[in-house]
Figure (tube, one colour):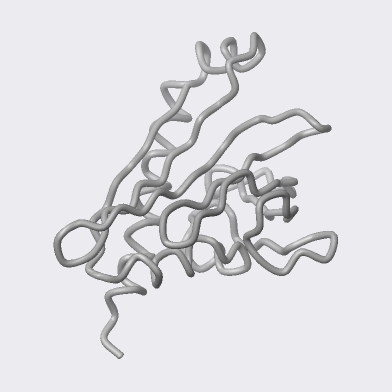
Length: 152
């Protein structure tokens, strides 16, 4: 009940981390989440910070807000957050950045919690949602790659 995509980017880890950890810019890269905003006075990617994302599921709808909490934030290495519904974790998304050659390998991943409702959901719809998530992660990372590799 998880998946990941890795893309090599010819850019410093710090430049990549700056983009993936700034949730207010997600709408520039994600095919599903078209905007996000920090909540409760948060202004950046600190563990425990809350934000909400505005999602257009599958790029078509329905449209809804998700409540998220930053769970890992290591500059230049990792940014991760969990999506919550009524105080229950429904998903965790992460970006891991590993220096490699002339830049860094960036891995975006998702992991669903191992609960009975999620196992049932995955058994019924996982084949389709997994493909949608992988395609979306690929699109997101390729858009970030274009941004960080763009000549100044």
